[in-house]
Image (cartoon, rainbow, N blue to C red; front, side):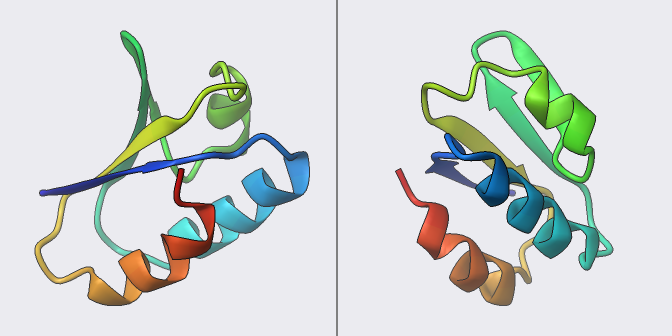
Length: 75
């Protein structure tokens, strides 16, 4: 498992993030405090407090390409 902190304060960033994560076959979740949502669910993401950075947890060890794509959202 890999994890990184990202910032998704703008709605356009959320849309782009979901588009990127939906291309992946493995499980990806977002954590904000005690809340955990599927990173491929735009509605789930909007239920989080996006004014603060959120943690992305990727359940795959072979995800270097995804980490490179998500670097633009790094908090």
